[in-house]
Image (cartoon, rainbow, N blue to C red; front, side, top):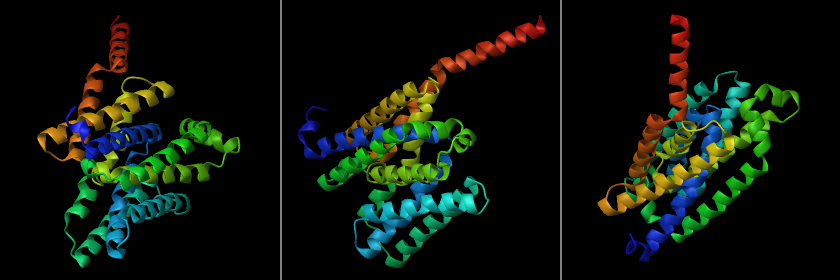
Length: 282
């Protein structure tokens, strides 16, 4: 590991892993608590259409993916609000159509190169200096907005109806949250890939949720699990020569099942269930 740290690509990968793991974990807490997991997956897969547009127009796919993700996120919010359909239905529509649009463009351009597949499956070990600088800027922006609107987001997460009653701009805050999810997807696609980024948005926060119900503690644990999964997955992928994105997600999944088995909340529920059965039988 020490020998690997001498190389620039490994240094960039470590910094990227730390930022990506932390940002995905932070916003993942809101995604888990608000039940937005499917929306995160929908926005992540929508980025494929944006990447394909980037290759078509010969621009940085990250920029086109960002524009596409934001447009899709807001379209989901608009459709669910104005169209009077459930968010899951809107996500399902845009999930399929944006992926199909991307596949259509790839077929038209007939581009099946390594660069394209690096966005689909991810490779944190090929992060360039330019990619790293962009990741740093976007990560700072996302975290800053989350901290600035933390009270409002927290209120909206736990009591949407009361938030409306007290006069919070619920629709605008909801669109802002979708915007931040889109930002986070763009930060992550080069590292873990379009196919797997939704797992990194959900799994660390879901792991933390198995261990605590305290919001602050959940954020801290989620960031720890997210960063640790990125570091360990990146190390394993570099040593064994396997895809980094897939390895990171598998490590995060393993951490989730370990937390599930060791969850004190799970044991408390079991004990409570046994106590109730004893009372009934008594």
